Length: 418
Image 1 (spheres, rainbow, N blue to C red):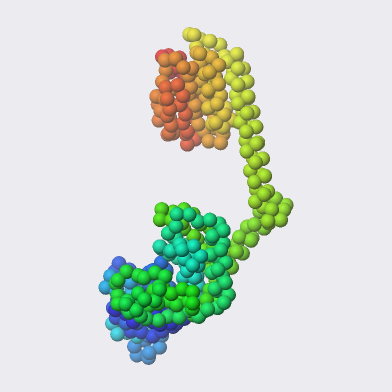
Image 2 (cartoon, rainbow, N blue to C red; image 1 turned 60 degrees about the horizontal axis):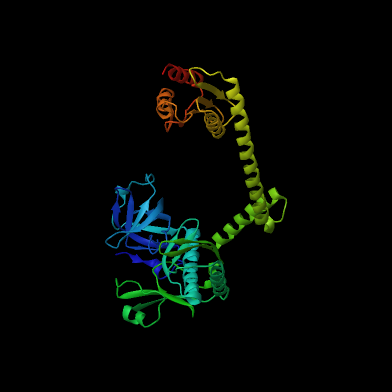
């Protein structure tokens, strides 16, 4: 098992080590005898960085390999996956015992320390205020989340937990690391005691606020978290999920939020705090206009259906209406077909539109002998389109308007000959 340097010092960004093993398949990777690279575990994502191979003759660095992922293998060894392909030096030239220097991506590590430490503070805040334990923690590249074991969660409770968490951060409490046996831990009042996998536990102690077992990287004082911002909360299967960001992520997120609100406020010609009110007003106006449009469309369809029926001569006891409406969308064409077949008991309507997408609508008055669904499928099969429907009403779309007029004429011929 590797010597895990990050257990003792989360701020260790550079270290020397020796190669223990070289893996070339399925991805190139190195295993070192000691490492400060943190592997994905406990909800925290892995470090990235570089491993520099030293020249065995001069002891000078001559190749810098990018570490893209770090995982813990089933046998407990830490595997450092390298960016492929490895160009600077063939891995076969690297042997067990080769000296290397590891360099952690410091900005990424600091971000992870802030997020993970913020999670400890936030989880403790929810327990202290509302007795809501955290059952899982997720750290992503953009945001983090905790899942709380609770049947309900309110906006006021979320804001109260955020306020307490930030107060602990402002107090800049020491964050200590210590090791105890499982028996000792059982009497210390840990927020969460992990499953019995090992006798010696690593504890993260936020002075007089939170004590829990954890193998992750953390700040040394709570003030280094730099701020905690709760973004949203939602019901999930096991309780409630709370999304948050901390440190520089919180600053970047707040900046993006402010920029978005400022842009929205400019569109409404109002202050950012009035954006919700203006948005609600705009939505109400849109709903009102939509209702007016629907009513106007209905009235227009009724009038156009009456005019069309009056202009169409009856043949063999039926009126066959064949139209291509380039300036009407599918919804209106379907509405028109319904009005035509309801205003008369002997109507066959074969309609098409090219706005905004080419489509067909076939309809007949109830009681007529044809099958519009079957006719639609037959017509679309020749146009490369898809659709279907019932005996009295069917619709479908085509990839191109080409061929629509001919398809309508062919469908009309089949109806008239039936």
